[in-house]
Length: 450
Image (cartoon, rainbow, N blue to C red; front, side, top):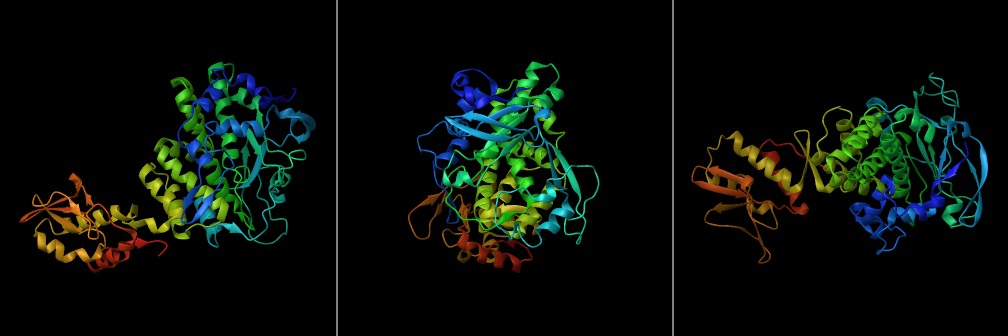
């Protein structure tokens, strides 16, 4: 088989109705946002190099990255290819990736000392991982320490970063590249052309999402003297690459294509299957996950306690709740915004409302308005009163201004002498006082990052 440079003909297929190209042309949700504005989280920023008015972010990436269609017979063979006025040397990578197994015990142990290895980030593959896979346990190359358990990832595609020359914008020596093993995709789909085009599109989109999450390619100005540990990197990177690609392509798949691709994803290793769970949880959940992952890749910082709870939640093998996943992702980079109560994650206002309602339930509703106000006094919320009497009052008045907040039906308490409404807004600065107050009534709330 000859190598096919898919990107070379990109100008010709831009107007076509091909599934992948149609999806990339029409996609308009949060992919565009991340390429177009500075992302702020707790004082950190990620500044992509793309224009604020560029509505073709993925096409912009494609213009910079050659996509090669290959088969297994070409693995580890080298070629010289012409690309955008330059000659480039390429070597088709191995179609199997050897990595340490990812299970809960291994992951927790790996995370005990943090998420980063205190070594320079040189973008070179760990020599221990570049070994032919034969299904046996391997000892570390230094011949001491615990055994490592290896697993093989049978790749359908690969994104090769090809640094460090790219960091200096010297595009003549190295270039990010994508390789797609078309013969392996065909072996999965057979001669069903509808399934073949769907899976081929999803695999290419998956690799493009790796490029999309490459903070060097996005022009992030940073200095990293660390490398994120491989198990966490593999888990989060592959999860998001699958989630992003599925969200992008879903509107362009017919029902048969979508079912075939999602059924295939369900047979993949855990990290890839998790991407489908994130995609099904919705765009907002994936958006928060993308925020947290880019921040982690840029800074190497994450709240260790939130990370451990998140990992435990993932490996419980339960149905994943989109709201819970979103809160975990927020907490990974902005821990002061989330709280853990009765094994669930909550936002600041969410935990306040939940605890107050739970307290009311423990007393079986046999409390007056004043009883509730005595237990949760207005002093613990610096912006609004904790309760208002209803129907005497129809909204909450800010303590420091004339602004008002509406009331919500789910926040009513039927007291002995009338209804109370619980305030739906709690400033983060009010939360330490609220948590301390709740502990006096026997409620344990875990705070992160304070």
